[in-house]
Structure formats: structure tokens, C-alpha cells
Amino acid sequence: MGAVIYYFAINHIARTLLDDHLSEEVSEVIGYVNLKKELPKQVDFDEDQTTFALLKDQHVPTRFYDTLYNNPKLAGTRAGRAVEGTMALNDRLYRFNIIISKESTEYLLQIITTITLVLVLGLFLVLFLTNRYLLGDLWKPFYRILGQLKAFNVSEPVEFNRVESKIDEFAELDDAVYLMAKRVKGDYQNLKHFTDNASHEMLTPLAVITSKLDTFIQDETLRKEQFDQIQDIYSAAGKLSRLNQSLLLLVKIENDLITDTEESELQEVILEKLKQFQELLSSKEITVETALTVKKLKVSKYLIDILLNNLISNAIRHNYSNGHIKIILTGSHLVFENTGSAVTLDSTAIFNRFQKGSGSEGTGLGLAIVRNICKVYGWTIDYKFVDGFHSFEIGWNQTEIPQVLH
Image 1: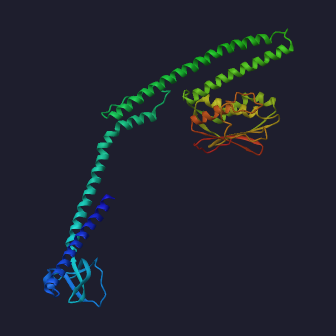
Image 2: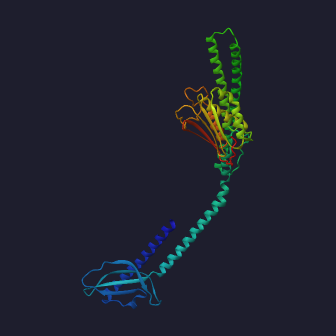
């Protein structure tokens, strides 16, 4: 932009100089006429082309304009600059027209433009080399710090490496990031120890309460009212124990503390799980239909066990007697469908913690745990209500050729 503005500025200056030169020529012509009382001849004006024409009473205003210049020494025409106006001689009006060549001015303008372009290109080259080599090296400490921030994992024991830099701002940034990482790791370890200790210490009194309640329940002298009250306490203690285990599991999943992986035949794990829930299914007379294909996944056996436990128990708990459950496994997704309430659930809130129906006796953490397990492996989970069935679909990116088993 500066070069373009510079070009037009130089062009304007050159035109102004030519107009000044033409104004001097006009003054010379008028001075000659006033002195000699006659029109000058062309030979009196070097290479300037001057013509006169007699006017009939009208007055021509003075104006400057671009035109063509015929060089008598060279063939052809060149660019020129002209001035036109009116002068008086012997009580008559004459129109004068003076044309001068712009060739030398345009040549100078071309030289200035070429020099400007060379300077601009040189500037671009210097800026490119400076950004590529000099500034690239200057910014290397910043990008090393940024790379460590991106790879930072609060649960890993790897320390944050210091980055040496001669630039004060980067050195200060490195100090701040190092102290932040150290403080975050310290806070995380304190929180982890607190969670582990709190969970462990909570289990002991819960075990004592459960043991004492078992003893009370076996007492044959208890009245029915007392038995019912002890049964409620026993149920609440069991729920508190499950809640403690679920919250601890969520913390472990969210912080990637469960890292064991092995290849599992998912269809076999599902069939094994259905055998474990067979008694509960029979008690509610729920019919289970399966359409399973061969699917191998490299996952934590513990986490996949928790995921299937929660999905199957959720399908049973929220079902009704003589209901139906459908389990579909393909190379791209796993679907659990179950009959139940005819009301569609809120798909935006169903996977939140402590989100459960008014009549549910669960902890409200089952589907939240399922969602977090899916996040660990980059799977998707969606809910929808279709044709009287509540459907939970887990999708993964891996695809295989299905082989139907059941």
C-alpha cells in the first residue's frame, strides 16, 4: 500500500513540475508578445511545440492536460503535457497551445518505480528470512513450553521440564508454568490421597454397621416394626456403600487411573453377563433377544464389565414384568433396548450424575459411569425412544465383517 501511494505521489509531483514548466513557457510567450508585438515562431522555442489560433470574441480558460507529443527528431509520437489559454495581441484574441514532452519525466518515474519495487521485494525477502530463521529460533522456547502444556497429564509422574531461554518474557513464562504444574500435581496428589483414604475409612464403619445389622436381623425376638426399621437401615447402608464405590470409580475413570487393557470377545462377555443376571431376569419374567456378531475390542476388562453391568441392570430395573430386552452387537455399534415407561427420557440430562427417576432406587450414577467409560475409548453413546423401547446405542469407529451367532 505504501508503494502504491508512493507511486501516485511521485506521479503527482512530476505532473506538478511539468505544469510549472508550462506556466513558465506561457509567461515567456506573453512577455515576448508584449515586447515584440508579434507572435513568436516555432524556432524560438527549442523542442516545445507552440501553436496559435485566432479567436472570435470567445475567451478560452487556461487548462493543463495530457496529450501526444510529436518529436521532430524522432519518428512517432510520445506522451506529452500541454497547456491551453487565451492571450491578446493588437486588440485581437489568440488561443495558444504549448506541448512539451513527458518522456524524460516518465523515464524518471519508471526508474523510481523500479527502485521502489526492488526495495519492497528486498524488504519482503528480509522479513521472510528473519521470520523463518531468526524469529523461528527466538520462539522455540515458547513452542517447547506450549508442547509440554499440551502433553501435560496431572496423573502422570513425569515432571515438567524447565526450558532455558535468554528472553525474559519466556523465562518468566517458564517459571510460572513450572510452578503451576508443580502446584497442580501437588493438589491432585492431595486430593487423590484424600479420596482414597476417605473411601477406605468409610468402608470400615459401613462394614461394621452391615455386620451388626445382620446380627440384629437374625434375632427371632424382633417385632415386625423393628425388623422393618432395621431392614431400611440395612438397605440405606448398602446404598451408601454402592454410592461410595461408584464415586470412587468415577474419579478413577476421569483421571485415567485404570490403564489395564486386553483383547476381549465382546459377544462372549455379553452372553456371560446375561447368565449372571438370569435369576433377576427370571424373577421379572423378562424376555431377552440377542443379535450378536463377532466383535473384538482392546479394552480394560474391568471397565467393560462395569459398562455391561450398568446397561443390563438399568434395562432390568426400569423394565416391567413380562417385558422385553433386545441386545444388538455389530461391527460398528452396541445397542441395548428395553421396554418400560412410555415417557421419553431427557437425552440431555440422562447421562448426568445423580439423574434418576422418582421411583428409582439406584444411585443415579450408572449411566454417568457408562458415558465416562465411552469417553475414555472415544466411543459415542446416544439415547432415543422408538416404538415403546428405550434405546441406548454405543458406537465405535472400528468396523468388521459381522458373523451372526444368535
